[in-house]
Amino acid sequence: MRNPRSLSRWLSWWLAVLASLGLGLVCSIVYVGASLNLSNKQTDELRHKRDIVRHLVGEIATRDALPSLRHKLDDFFVGHANLELRLIQGSDALLYATPARSSPGAILRRDEFEISVPWSPTTMLRAELILDSSADALLLEQLAWTLLASALGGAAAISVGGAWLVRRALLPVRDLARQAAALSPESVGQPLDGSAQAQELQPLVTQFNALLVRLNRAYQQLEGFNADVAHELRTPLATLIGETELALSRQRDVAELRDVLGSNLEDLQLLAGLVNDMLFLSRADRGERARRHRVDSLAELVSEVIEFHEASMQEAGVTARLRGDGMGTVDAGLVRRALSNLLANATRFAERGSVIEVDIKQDADGRICLSVSNTGPVIPPEHLPRLFDRFYRVDGAREHRDHNHGLGLAIVAAIARMHGGATFVRSAAGTTSVGLTMTVMDSCSVTGH
Image (cartoon, helix red, strand yellow):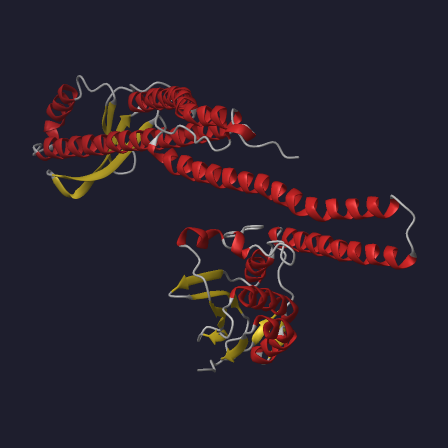
């Protein structure tokens, strides 16, 4: 398994890299600027000296005044140890030259130009100015080393300081880790203390605390679910054990044993149904999706379910009426199961002589809404949010434990989730409507009333 990356080392490393790049860029700019300034200074100095040489030569009216020119040039170059001048007439006639002042290996910069001779308009003097820039080169070299040392030292200082700041900034994260490590199943609902955390960590603390609340609720629901499962299994198991012990307590004929086995079979079927429903809910909780197939008419599918429940509805003294239609890709088996649970629930609690309304609605986006409404006792508002919880019953009047183990509406909610939808319930003015929405793959036209 790949080792997790250290955030502090990663931040420290990149802080060092960025500091080195930043300081290197600044130092490079300083070095280039200094080099350009020195180069411009040298150019200005050569141009200035060239103008002076032109002026001095221009003051000589006759060739006999050459000694005076040499004297003036000697006086001018006194104190300019980095400058040399050579005046050449024609191809090789050297009229003036300053003593050689540059050392071997010196960095020289030359400026050659021509000067007209006053005493001979047709003759041009070739002048050569030589500037020894070794001092400037040495200065630039010293500046380069100074800037390099400054950049490396500054980068090292910033890196060390940045690493310390990063570790200090991550101390709240370690504190959160210690708080999270201290959580246990008994204290899973206790929120993390984020009062001392940085502003950037507040959303993380808030979301983590919200997760703890959901986890605590799920943990409590799991404990309640275990208790409900034990309670639901205890009654049929106790009945099976009692009837079996009673049957074995004395000699019985075949007819009596057949009655006992038939009664036990009913309880076993109830247990099998409970186990199958729990397995279905477990698969739905693990994210199993519906196996969709195209259904051209949901009304036909609902009519089949109503026909299946016709006998129980006649016994309860109610009838069913279907309104609307829709089509799309759904899991027909799961839709039948959800509608069967909703219709059975409505039949149990509907008033005799009333009509159960089954509505199918489909919007322009293809989202289907199936609802079953019955006339009967109103469900108190505080029970509505938990109506689809497992094994949840509103009151004793709605228990019907002999035929219902409390997972019907939970299965409806699971089927809605498997179709990308949700459940809803409304109970007011003597009418209770329970249903689900489903996202179908096809966008279909809406039919119905």
